[in-house]
Image (cartoon, rainbow, N blue to C red):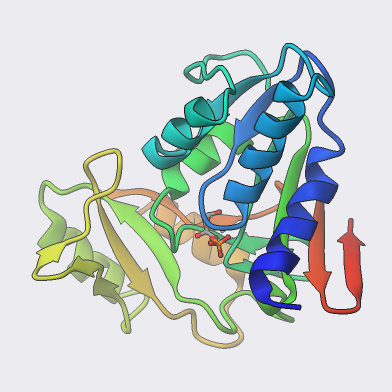
Length: 225
Ligand code: ABF
C-alpha cells in the first residue's frame, strides 16, 4: 500500500468523527487534503449537513471551496473539531508541524478546537520530538537577520527557509527559520525560550494540543490517545 493510500485511510477515520452542524478546522498539507475532500464528498452525498470550515491556509481555503465546504474566517467561538497532519508525532502526542509553512494559522485554529485530531502515515511517528524533522519557527520579516542571530544562539544549526533564490514567505507575510533540535533537549523549555525570543511569531511545536491521532501503516490504522 502506498503512502498516499495510507494518508487517505487516516483522514477518513478522522472525518468519521465530524458531525452535522460542526464548525471544523481544516488542516493543511497532503494528508489534510484527503480530509477536506472527504468532508466535501459527505456534504455532497447528504451524509453530513451544515458543516462549516475554518481553513488553516490559503491553499486549504481554496480546496475547501472547490469541494463545496462553506468557509468562514476564524473568530473567537470554539471549533467543534480540527483535523490536520503533522511532521512528527511523539508517543505523548506532542507534535512538530509547519514544514508545509502554515504553522501559525494551524496553531491559532487548532488551539480553539474542542477536539484536535492528527492524521498521518506511520513515517511521522518518532520516539522523541526532533528525531527526524527540523523545527520550523515563523519569524517577522522586519529585522529578521537580528532575529536569526538570536535564534542561532539557541539552535545553532538553523537556516532561513528559501524558495529558490528568495526567502520563503508564509501566508502571513513572515519568514521561516528551520532548525534541528539537539538530542536530549527539554522540549517544553525550548518552546518557552523560543516564544520569549524577540522577532519569533510562533513555533511548530504543538505541545499538549492533540486529543488523538490516527496513524496509518500497511497493517492498519492505529489510534493514539
Ligand atoms: C501540515 O502539513 C503541517 O503542519 C505539516 O507541516 C504538514 C504535514 O504535511 P503532510 O501531511 O503533507 O505530510 O499539517
